[in-house]
Each structure stands twice: as C-alpha cells, then as structure tokens.
Amino acid sequence: MGTGSLNRRELLLTGLLAGCDVKPGELQGGWVGAHADRGHRLRGELPKPGEGPVRRTTVLIVGGGVAGLACARALGKSGIDDVALLELEDEVGGNARGHQMAAGSQTIACPLGAHYLPLPGAQAPEVYQLLEDLGLVRQQLGRAVYDERQLCHAPQERLFFEGEWRDGLLPPATKAGTRAQYRRFAAAVSAAQKDLGFAMPSFRAPWTAAHAALDAQTFAAWLDARALTDPQLRWYLDYCCRDDYGATAAEVSAWAGLHYFASRHGFHPPGDEVAEREAVLTWPEGNAYLTRRMAGELSGRIHSGRTALRVQVQKHQVEVLAWNEAMQAPERWVAQQVVLATPLFIAARLLAEPPEALRQAAQALRYAPWLVANLQLKAPLLDRLGVPPAWDNVAYGSFGSSALLGYVDASHQRLNPSRGATVLTAYWALPRAERPALLQSSWQTWVQRVVTELQGLHPDLPQQLQRVDLTRWGHAMSMPLPGVRGSAALAALRQLQPRQPSQRVHFAHSDLAGYSVFEEAYTQGVRTAQQIIRRATRSGA
Image (cartoon, rainbow, N blue to C red; front, side, top):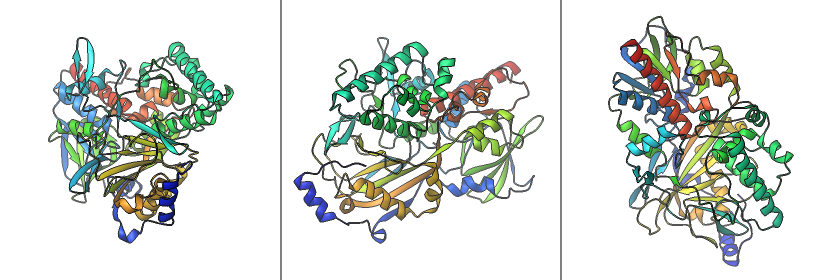
C-alpha cells in the first residue's frame, strides 16, 4: 500500500517503530474457518462401494454456501420438507461465514469472507424477497425502505491519498486530464447501460454480438483502445476488479469490467451532484449475518462436517458417498434429486460421469485465492490527517500483485460511537501463483506480510496487535476472464429447459455466471429449487 508523504509527527512515530517486527512467539493466532485437507480428500483413495450406513432423502443438496442455502430455503417454503444439505465445513455459509474475537472486555464479530451486500435492483427480486422476509426492508407507499441500522454507517469509505485520508475511494481528480478521463469513462458506462444492457444477476440482461465482443478482450485492452490511461483512473478500475473478481483489469474481460458499474450504480466522477454514494448492507460478521439467518430456517436439514466424495447417478435414484468428519467414517446418502451447489470443478470431480458441458466449463474456469486476516487490537490506532476512520479503508498506490486491498473495521456498525478495542479485517486477493504458498506457509509468515503492508498506514499497529486469525481460501471465487461469460458450456448448464424427465442431478452455484457475488449465487439456488418444484408438481409428488 502506498503511504505518500509523512508529517513531522508521523516521521517521529515511524522512527520510534522502525524495524518493529511482529514477534511470532509473542502473538496469538492461527488458521481458522476453512479446512483445506477436507477438500483435498477427493485427491486420495475413496472408500470402497457399499461402505457406510445408508441415509435417504427426497432432495439432497451438496454444498452449504449461499446457493445451497437458497435452494434448501426455497424448497422448504414450497412444502418440500424432505431435504438434506451436506456441508464440508463445520458451519454453513461458504465464503460468507463469520468469526468472533475477544477484543478487550467484549466479543466482536467479524467476517471470514464476503462482508457487504449492495441493495438489490429490480432484476434481483429473489434477493429483495429474502431481505424482506428477514425484516431488513419493507414496502412503504410503493417504495423500498431499508432498516437504517443495517445500512453501512457513515463514514462509509476513505482513501489514503497523498499523505492524508480522503472521503470515498475514487482518487481526487487533481489534474484536468484526470477529470476529463473520469467524465469519458462515466459516459462510456452510461452508453453501455443504455445501448447494450447489463443486469444483476447477469442472465437477466441480453447477450448480443456486442456483449460477446467485450467478453473476447481484456478490460485493460478495451481501456487502452480508448486512450483511458490516466494512472488514477486505472488504479481505481484495477482496485474494483480485484475487489469484486480477485483479478486485475489486465486479466478480466471488458464485459466484466463494465458489468461492475453498468449492472448497478454506474460510474460517477467527483463533482457529480446527481449521484449519491451507493448504499450497502453490512454487519460486523459480514454476510454471515444473512447465511446464519437462512440456516436458522433449516433446522434438522443441515448436516455439516460431511465431505462429498462421489456422486453416482442410478436409474431411479442418486447415491452420494460422503465422509463424516466427526466420525472419520464413510456414509451413503440416497436421494431422488441431487443439487450440486459446489464450484463446477468440484462437481465435475464428484460425478462419476459428468456431462460434457460440465467438463468444458470446469476446464475453462480459473479461481482466485484469497487471504482474510482478522487483527484484534487493544486500542484504536493513531490516525493520520484527513477524514476520520471509516468502515472501508484503502490506500492509493501501485498494487502490483502483492498488496492488500484494504481493511474494514468490524466495530464500525456498532451503535456505541465511542472508539475502543476493535478487530480490523484485511483482505488480500492473491495471484494464482501464490496458492501453493497460501496453503503451505505458516500463519506467522502471512501475519508478518499483512502487518508489513498495514504498518505503512498505521506505524503503531505492532504495539496494539494482540491476535491475528487468518482464513485462506484456495479457490475463493471464479474469475471472469475473457471468454468465460460467453462460454457455450456455461450457457448450457444455465438453461432450465429443455430438461430430460429422467434428469436427477442439478447445478446451483455462482460459477454458472462466471464470477462470484451474492446475488448470482442466491438467484441460482432459487432457480434450481423452482425447477425441482415444477418437476414435483408435474409428477404429482
């Protein structure tokens, strides 16, 4: 993270703490949240056929992330109660799970992954209905009114730029050339919204030759062709791509780069008086607030600590071999319908005979590894010049491929405004080449890297740090590289019709959209449930 210039007070503090490394023996912490060894069971020798007790259900869902929970929830609301959900981890939620850390005399919730949800637009009625069911929004005089306690409190975002904290994340347009490029990019986004059409979830927008042309090139190449090369604009667009997709503008497609803005709130340069900052819902534990509420509606149907190993489609049923992590023993599940709410490369490995479209899609997708570090602090950090601490805190600079995206303050949403002990959640979208190091290096090694990054912003961080809990996501999210969104294989898997009457395996995951966000995952889960419900209605089951 870039640090810019330092004032006299900061120079003194930096001098006092120069060379102040975190001492591994003095710091508590470790890996939490994700068990890589469980996922890697698929690489080893499988139990013999016929081993383990048999359990039966009408619908079996493999995977307890957002899509799996959405599917189970929709099935239950339709009256299909004989549903079981298998989850590899000890808690459902996928990469939208939460954590707790003791900060001072209190316990502070914090996220292990996804930490906010933009307000859903008209194209995401399923997500809106969920929020209404959970009491987070209501209709008043034909208008959606959100519970303000659940909306991100002010100040929402800040950027460390040229030696001080500035409001918002878009770098200030300090030069006329920068302002002009901001306006040109804003016009390009508006034209894309109007002339092409974008939506969230993405399948509700048209797909034309113009969309395919965008999908065939990188976002960086598209920007270069339009001479949109201002360093501040390009830094910001690179940040947005890494934040939502885990990949840079030079990696993701131009469709994905424009979709980030055109499917939601557009792009608004400084001085645009018409635009308001996009409101988002967030909680101390991040989107675990939503997944835990959904899981609470599925009492008795969730079976955590079960690693699926093989899915065998038979004439009248589907048999799933799973490993019970608590018992360290195999068990067999037999169902009439199975929903694979897993990443597509996992689904392709699980199925004994995967369809060709699934094979091709699994081969085409690439996944971004992420590191999430929750840093427990004894007291607030000394701050620099500019706006006060915000929920989302980012430093301007040349990211390269080795810098943190920024951090959020888990205590920001608490109603008590007084500052005290807190937990900062730092996010790091890593290049794919670092996946082996993420899995093999010690947690202390990664703590040192995280602290080194953040110490440029907060020189007193080592003095206040008490504990660091880290979560590693080896395959956190699929990246919308060129050609992914327009993939014929993904399109075939997304199609609900025609379906063979004998089909018993269904797919529900954000991978079907080619990238990973809550709206895509939740909607895919609901759509898959609707397909199963229609089949049950036609058959009279």
